[in-house]
Length: 389
Image 1 (cartoon, helix red, strand yellow):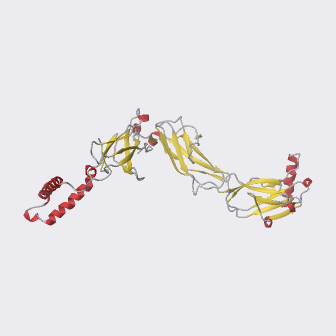
Image 2: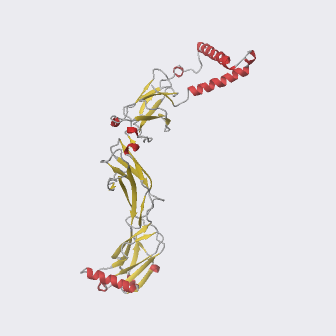
Image 3: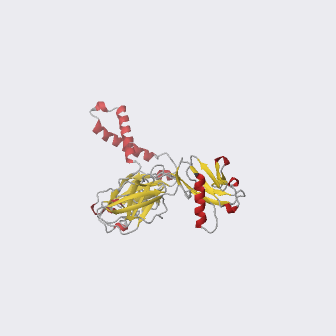
């Protein structure tokens, strides 16, 4: 039966060309991983070649003769079992050679898996002008053969189906729609994945452009000292200019770090102000600060909005502590007396609130007050506090 197949393939190729050629069957097959393949190479008798002098290579590596089967004087087969995924998405090269090494014919083997349903489809619009979407391939994401992903979208209740065309954003599994988008009307969006072994479609998401708006990072971010206060800095910034004509309420976040650190601390409760005072900072230290914006409630949208990228870092230093500048850790006698008077005043004020009668006056009560005082200092000096200005 295989001899007859080789003969039919050879006759078809001879009649299709004026020059006798060799041919491989099947030509460029697509196969699932783990499957087996028997391929045949047939040459013209006029070439004067005998099949028992030929050999096979796969991706340049010669296959063992134990995998061959001589079907006729001019037809040699090879059988491959438990195929692994293709080493390159353009396919593996299965080649039939003459005994002296010349290439007689070749075929590409596409060995892989059909795509799985794409997941994690999310979209965002920069300033309501465009739409970008990204997704994750289903399963492990590796199909071993070229797989095409197509983002499709349409207006929910009317309009024709369209395909996103710009996949050149520099990120895989991302597509960009630059224009011609409708507001106040929901879209249906999905992704289709296809290759030579099958197709898969993601879940359809429904969204309104106004619900997925993000914007540019705040500009004109300035960081400055608060007079001679050694533990505070003021941060000021501008609202997003691209959204100046839109009805919305912005939310802001601030993050900052020490000059010699890579760890950022985030201040969440800035609200919609465009200035903030950072308190509880370290004296005589350079801080880098960034701000980002979340445009909430554009034209009445009830969605949470999407955070912008962080602004470019701005930097400023807190003033040096006077005590550090004096070069001494020991307070002066006058400072000691002043500190003692202040603490005694605080102590007796605390006693009036927390103690009753003379029996309450004791060392134990004083110790309790010291604990309370330390806690109040920790609260007051807590890093990350932000006060709107």
